Image 1 (cartoon, rainbow, N blue to C red):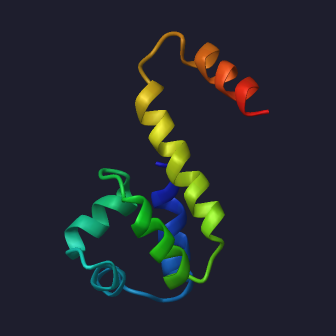
Image 2: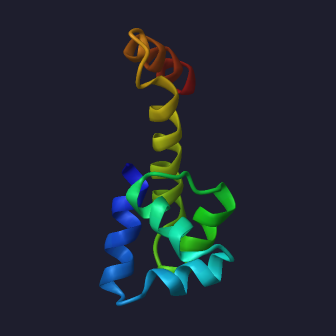
Image 3: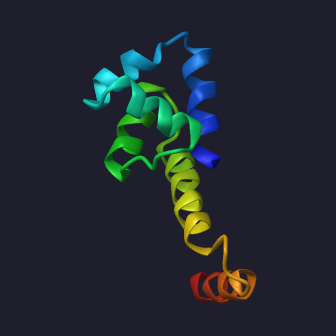
Length: 92
């Protein structure tokens, strides 16, 4: 959701093919395509590697990856906003 769109933008800006990034991540192209479409979650270590391959800020991609993880966990919870506010207060 958050990450897929961004890595697709970065890949296209650099005129890279999905298969090139997939090969560098040692996964098949369909799996990489699912990551870009938000149908599959990337692993943390893949995000770090993607940041290097796409010449972008690792922390930006990691934040997007983590936001996606959190979203997937709370999206169907009625008390999601309350829970997120509690976490935010704890992190401050």
